[in-house]
Length: 277
Ligand SMILES: NC(=O)c1ccc[n+]([C@@H]2O[C@H](COP(=O)([O-])OP(=O)(O)OC[C@H]3O[C@@H](n4cnc5c(N)ncnc54)[C@H](O)[C@@H]3O)[C@@H](O)[C@H]2O)c1
Image (cartoon, rainbow, N blue to C red; front, side, top):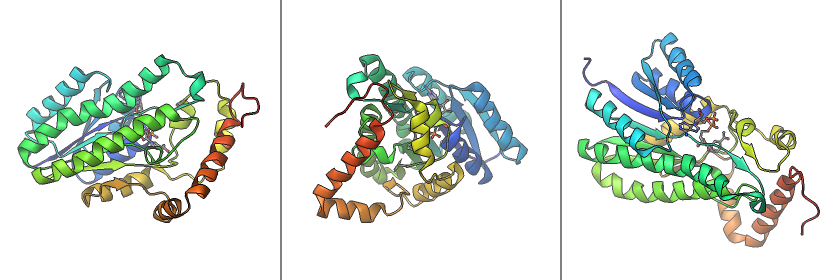
């Protein structure tokens, strides 16, 4: 086997942001393990990489299954003798008022978005600590940094990922391991159309989304890889984010008014919504 080949695992690598991360890593001569529940999409990612001269392999993986994630990560480590990157990126979207949500909805999104990230982190971190290097990037969201009315469960999982990742960042840096929370905002991927709209009109949601300026997954992946390389705590390429943070601290009443405005706009897509105050 070739010596010193760098190796990455990317969950959710069959589509969107995950696929863009896979192709860009492969362009940097990293061997990429594309891990996803979607076999067709995952194999397409591998074939895109191979056509461009890179090296990759698809592994069918359900991130909700701790034993499967642990076995896959350890097998990759054993085979290559190293693990350079672990991207815990697989996720789903879910929109709806909390009063319309069942515990099954909660379980589904927490299992994929949060437990998926915990499983990947728990499996990869001890190996990286042992080898004394490596990078873990957990995909949260800008929804993990503030309130998201009509997406409370999604925001819950993403806040938890930010908490896990930013805490581990400081533990792991003493062992040579970089840990970064990726917080995209509006990246043009199928997550919005595939997302679960609980009692929501998805046509209205997409009409609202079409008014937003979307970033391409490739653009986001470039920013994410650069941020991870620089050992940034959080990568959130939201225009004016810092200005907004300062603004929100200085003028909390205006922040609350803005969030209420977003809540009312999002509610327009609720099919049973009457007038709320
Ligand atoms: N697109 C955005 O604007 C945006 C914004 C904020 C956060 N994010 C986050 O970015 C990440 C990637 O999203 P995307 O926009 O590329 O979406 P996407 O739908 O294009 O990709 C998500 C991938 O996750 C995979 N996946 C879903 N459940 C899985 C499971 N149980 N096991 C393994 N794989 C599974 C899907 O098959 C898919 O390939 C998600 O965590 C998402 O929450 C995206």
